[in-house]
Image (cartoon, rainbow, N blue to C red; front, top):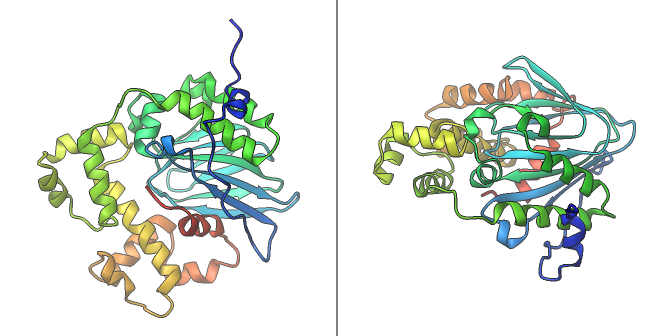
Length: 308
């Protein structure tokens, strides 16, 4: 039987339309193109957003990528780039297509120039529905389609490569995931409730309060959370809280040095401990290093993306 090219099919099916592309964001200093695009409305339960990244040929840069509560599928059509997890002493060169599991630490990415990438940020239920395996088995890992035993991801990579332009690429992704993810519900109401509460409180929520609100024992919640999300609820809440804190740090930290006290931190030492955990440096040292190390992609994403 001839294999169906879902991307081409998606271009002619009239009732499957991606959202209009969001405003293109360009740096006034560097030739960096980073774009965030919402998925098809029927995929909103599963996918947070798509993104497109391009850098100029011969232009190298180093980017800090914070954990943000999402796993990602990255389709790389440009130069090979390096992915460093210094805490675990892992370095990988990423060439074509790979999936990045949920992370609990910041990684350093070296973009060597001529980068052209299309990415998919999955909500926890989306990745679980796609892979149908416990997500803690792939957390903090970067895996190829061969390592995942999922050749359809390589096929998707090849099909997106053939599409004529960004709008067609997004249409291709929508069509692929509409066929893969719109299946019987694989979610768990306890996990859905837990994620909702953690996000509602922006991570500033005690785990015993979470347990009592859901009327579930912590061990049960932790086991389910690791299966469906890839991390423990405590780690996930810590990531969500710091993501919000990091955004506020850039927005108001310079004129309100005690801003973190309203975000669930007991004192300055508590805030600095979290800052060092995620960024491996202190807030003051981080600000001094900003000229040499960029986090523009992360900050743009936090501004433009409507999380979860």
